[in-house]
Length: 426
Ligand SMILES: *[C@@H]1O[C@H](CO)[C@@H](O)[C@H](O)[C@H]1NC(C)=O
Ligand SMILES: *[C@@H]1O[C@H](CO)[C@@H](O)[C@H](O)[C@H]1NC(C)=O
Image 1 (cartoon, protein in one colour):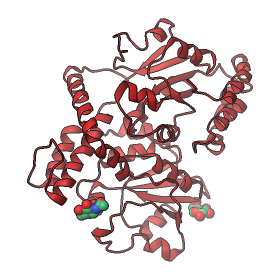
Image 2 (cartoon, protein in one colour):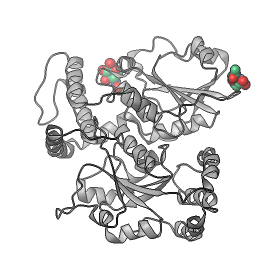
Image 3 (cartoon, protein in one colour):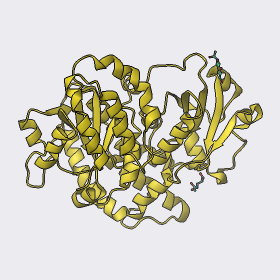
Image 4 (cartoon, protein in one colour):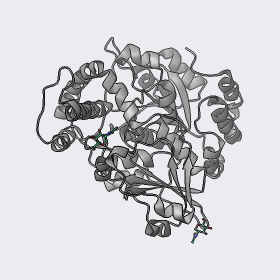
């Protein structure tokens, strides 16, 4: 399997001196990250630069611990982001393996997002230092040795949920035997299974709205759809937003003196590769990126009552986890006001060309009238045409597969919740 480029191996060889004092660390880290990502727009030099001062400080100290975590990261949500955050806390450098499309098809059925989209999402997380594309689904002995020898991994990290291979053995047994395994706590409250469930139930409500027909295999529901949908989300989402989680995801820094503050707003529903790209472009226009995340009510009014799929706190955490974001307004107004511009010293307000604003709902007035009048409004080309709706459409188009897959997973999730016990950690 070709999960690495030759340049990666080349860099790794020069990397050995790190073990004896870490002198080459900075150069090697930058070299690897830039050469490795050719062809995919993921973090390159500018995003690693802010970390250099930290690296320099640590350079003289002990050997840096490199940890590895893998996953499919399909329909990535803040639960994945939180796992990655915890993994990073167990070491100094986090390498994330993203499982290949082929391996996902073989083990779980077709992924919703392709390799490139999943890589862009994972690379956009602020705790990720390097990614390995096309990682295997299960860590084989061969792959484990490559992790240890070529990638200089010290520990392999996985959540506390058991991960069994088809033959019933523990997927991490080898790493455990080698004493190179560490565990993190599962993030409660969300899973890709819930999200697929939410998309399917919102599709059901759309189809009932427009044609009163239901998707094959669904019972016809009547009544107030919005309320039913809320009930459905309440039933599916077990997310308990805590102030501590928000703190863990935050940068905890305001804009420095003379910083140029860039403001972008949106729903950021079902956080996807297109969001990562637009946030990156926006961040490049200044020194500090402030993101306004709309309230659930605003989105329902703009896009229809079946939206948003993810609630305000869930959406805010996904945005906060992105490396290009400095600060989030949790529940931003739809209209950019003069007061906001003054309060946050906003220098430029940006908006992407790909937008999901529903024009049939009749825009009462232009939400960007103030920044336009002030001459600080900029439209930036959205680098990808992927949207929340297009991601949802992929699932709806294949809903038979996903309904089946979800039914199976929902059963095991139910069992998990029924049997779960307190586990300490964060
Ligand atoms: C407000 O932003 C401008 C950049 O647009 C910057 O020059 C100025 O110093 C900022 N004001 C303060 C008080 O930081
Ligand atoms: C636009 O909003 C209306 C009313 O809320 C909704 O019925 C319709 O499905 C929406 N259209 C799109 C493309 O989201």
